Image (cartoon, rainbow, N blue to C red; front, side, top):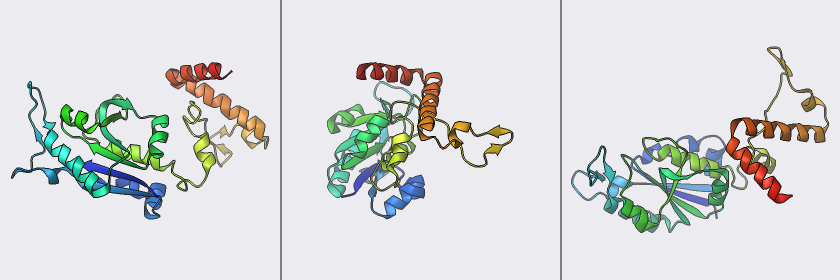
Length: 237
C-alpha cells in the first residue's frame, strides 16, 4: 500500500504544486504515494462560508473556528480513512528535522492541517490530538508551503522514489552532520580546481576527505548539531 497524505487547506488549488514535478511528481503518478486535499471552507455553515472569527480577549487578526475545523477533520477521516498521525503546521510546533521526517515517512498515512490568519482555536488542537510541527523560527502566511516541504522531505525517503539508497545515506543529517561539498566537470573552472583527492581514484581517501569536510562545515555553521554529534560519538565509544 502506498504512503498516503491528506491535506486540509483553504487553498486546495495550491496542490500538488511543486510536488507534482520532478521525482516526487513521477512517484505520485507511479502510485508510490497518494495525495488528497479537502477544502476547509466547504465545512462552513453560515451564508458567508466563514471559517474564522475575532479572538476572545482581543488582539489583532482572526482565528480559525474550532467547529468548522473539527468538522473538516472528521470529513477528511470519513472520506480518506483515519490517519496514523494528524499534524497542524504551526510556528510554535516542534521543529521538523530529518529524524522526524524519517518517522513520518514510515507511517501509513498523515493528515496535515494548514492554518491561516493568526492560527486555530486551541480547543480543536486538543480535541483532535493534533501534533504541532514547525519548519523553523519564522512565520508564514499559512501552512501550505510548510505542508509541501514536509511532504517532499518524506516522499524522498519512500522506497523507489530516488532509486539509489546511497543518495539518502550520504546526504545532510543522515549521520548528524551537514553534507560535504560536491564537485563535477569541468575539473578546472574560473581558476578553481576540483580537490585532487576526488580525482585520485582512492575510495578510502575520498571517504576520509568527505567525512572531514562534513565535520568542518557542521562545526562552523551549526554548532548545535556539532555538539550533539560529538556527544553521540562519545556515547558510542
